[in-house]
Length: 162
Image (cartoon, rainbow, N blue to C red; front, side, top):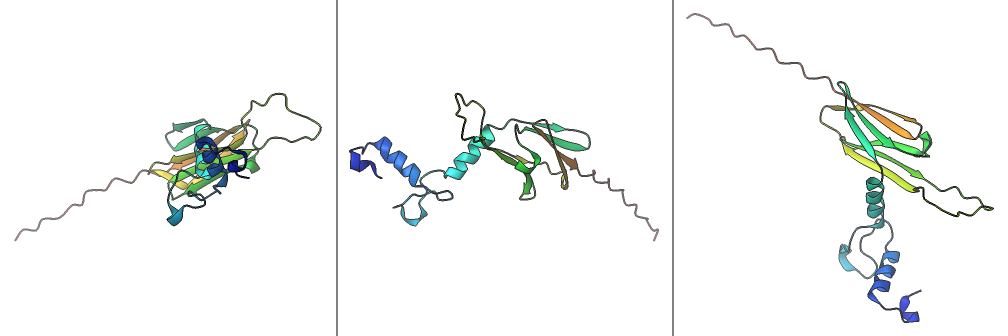
């Protein structure tokens, strides 16, 4: 239903209506020709908020990198660890609110929704050797380091006397 029917043609109402009309994955709303970009998509905004609200620590050890991410209330089946573009480690999950028909919330303070972090791993990280362990709501992802390249031995050239 449009705001014009109720005499609510204010810029704020128009902007809210426009936001409601944007489906996921589409930046331009209806009536915008040529795929003209009008702003970020809902998916982009959701992912940006999830990344900003997901605390993480990154540690470097002699043989590996550790990514420690708070994932409260999520089980191992709710967490995804992926490698994109061969160098981007993506850690994500979603926490959903428990719905009970006979209970109503008096206060809701715990964060619900998507949790996500993206990290560009260093060049010496071995993205084929990644392990992840979730214990007490804290996810620890270990990315092993590649062995250092062996130093090149100098090539000795024998000098011949002519």
